[in-house]
Length: 311
Image (cartoon, rainbow, N blue to C red; front, side, top):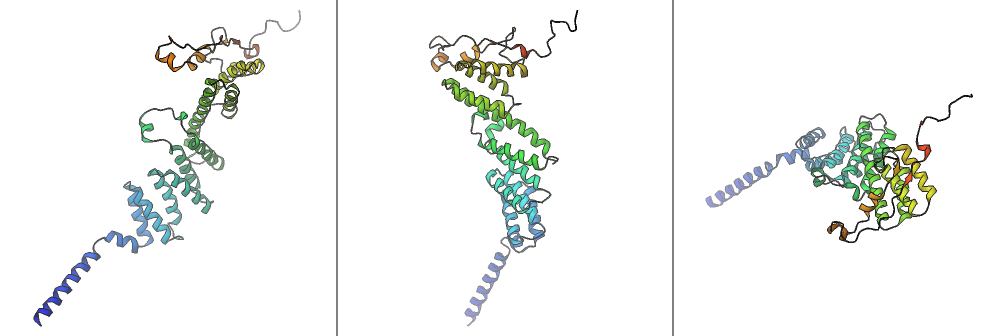
């Protein structure tokens, strides 16, 4: 009988001890699941401040699920976008931003959600190597850059006086130059393969779509050469007039005002054999220099030789 009582006492002791250990195993988790809305929000803020964005996303999503109409619901949705952006989950951040705009079209922080969406597209194809080393991003897929440009344009159209507008405008200038350069790279690709019509169309697209980009003057030069090779001298001279009027200091103009593209043509059309033999073998068939002169109309404000008035 004594043995039975002792055994029962031991079992109760084990159960009591185990129960205490279970109860104290994860007090933070118990507080999280059973805490108030304010407690859960404070925990998410601690995670954000410490850089634990994955944990913050989980806490904020749990907060929104438990209190969908609570005082922190909209703020939680907004901070989910931020945490996803900071964690590099750009597609998720864009989807969350769209959801926020759909649920809260009149929210005072909607411009911030749109700004984060644009930033997510802006950084989508930019890896750590790009941030450390300089690389020509214009030679990559430009779909994300094009999306970012459109999203930033929507932000400025809807909130032109937003506090994020100045930074947005600067990023759009960068994106415009990069997109224009990407189109020019395609035009150059067509020129290398003697697809002059396709090259002309791409160059014209750059001039018409990105008229103030850093690639505009080179696009005009491509347009001139492509039209020249196609035998369209009038079109070539029209493009030359535009180049001379808007970019009189373009690098291919010589001291006499003639447009000399022989150097660009020679460098572009060199083969691999010509490169590795330092120009000895397989020399490119360079046509005569495109020696189209600036039209007289390009000389803006030139003084007249004829005196005004009558004798």
